[in-house]
Length: 345
Picture 1: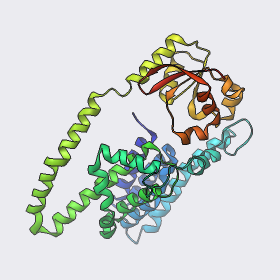
Picture 2: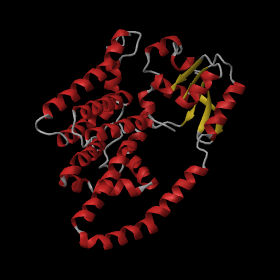
Picture 3: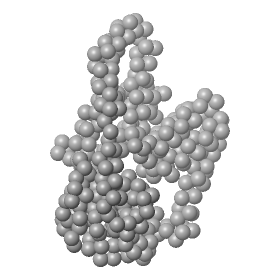
Picture 4: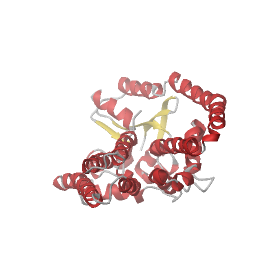
């Protein structure tokens, strides 16, 4: 499974690597801008890491060429990212209007429009539960990495990395919407801080090298490696898409190709490839004017089937037509967590 966050994280790491180039050249700044723009075009919200990237770029430029490096970075980044709104403008999808989606509305919805998941500081919030599920899966990168943020900020060469992780943790505390894939961009910066802290101990406290190596080795052998091996074995042996594939096959075998089927993005693609003319990605319901006008003109009454796992209450609250369809439906068959519902609205 690959999210946009996977692609954006790859590009943001490339941007950080280019910014930290020992050449301290204008070319390094240019490539950093190119990779950061690529990350932003994959996932707009990744731009929250801009302050950390600029800080790293400043650290790795000489005073003589700093203005040029930063100028090249910001101009290149701005021009590349501007291609996004220009493309939307040419398609008449930059600003909200009747009968079409818009980039400005989509950005607003990404940041402010969705129901909040609560703050990380609230143990009863969805964000806290999500963070706990991450640490239950693998506590050995996230928890030590977050705990080492003060160390990262205290050591000059690690400050941009510490800031990058701090920004992401602070965003989890603001009470906004928290997606499941948010953890993807946290992991590499947590890993870098752990490695950086080990390097500080190794280089600055030579007398403790033997003790440090022994303690790290014992912890890895007794705690980290067994946990990782168990998790990786479980992940490798469990077919997470089996239920989704089974539900897709049932729909293909039992539902007409012209039926309106609201489903998730995985099944949506398979139904399109199978010749279905009116599959609807669940997030298009109530948010895409064209879909509502052309495929769902009668609202929930236009839906024939809903094929998806149970959604969070906050998700259904944002999609009232989908919520009504779920309420006015009957479960036909279930494949694990994936439920096929017939709508009677």
